[in-house]
Image (cartoon, rainbow, N blue to C red; front, side, top):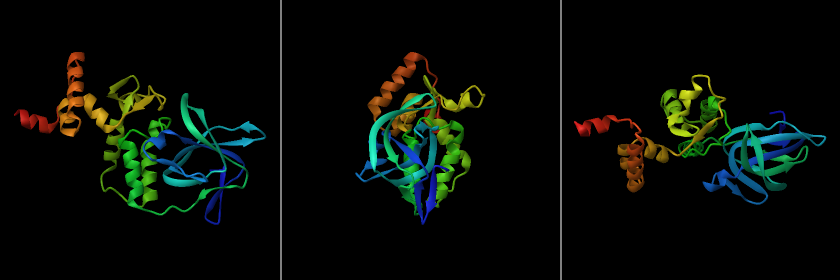
Length: 236
C-alpha cells in the first residue's frame, strides 16, 4: 500500500495518516488498547492526508492480529460505503513507525479469523465478493490449511451473511443475481442463524429456551424450516 513503506522489517507512514480501528473489535477482545500500542485484528481502514485534504478511505488488508503504534488517538465515526462505523482514530506523522512488518506463522491466527467469521464480527463494510479472498490471505499468513475444499469456506460465508431486512434469506442469493452492491448485507453469529432457521438444529445446538421460542415464532409467521438429514432419520 502506497501509504506505507517498509524499512528494516518495519512499516512506516509515507505521509500524514489516519488509521481507523473498529471499536466493535473490543467487545470480543480482538482489540486491546495498551496505551502506546494497540493490539488489533488487522482488517482496518486507513486514509492519507495531503495538505490538509483527506484522501479516500482504503482497506488495510492484514487479516490477523497485529500491533500498531499509538502516538495520538481519539474516538470518532467514519462513513464507509454509506455505513457509519465507530472507530478509534490513530494519527501518524510522515516517516513515523506504524507497525512491524514480520508476522510469525501459527494456527492461532487462523483460529482467530474463523472465530470472527462464525461470530459475524468481520467489519460489515467489506465487499461480499472479496470475503473468500480475505480468508485465503489469512490462511496464507497463518501458514496452515484446514484441509477442506474451498467450497466449505464459501458455504460458511454464505450462511453467515444474510439479506438485509430478511435474515432468513442468504445474501448470496441476491448477490448472485447481480442485483446488489456487495455491501447491503447483515451478519449474525452462527448460533443466532441456527435459532432463526431450524428449531430442531437449534435445540441440538444450545440455549434450548431461546431456540424453542424462535421455532414458535417461525410457526406463527409461516416460515418454512429446512429439514436436516438427522431429523429425517429420527422422524423415520
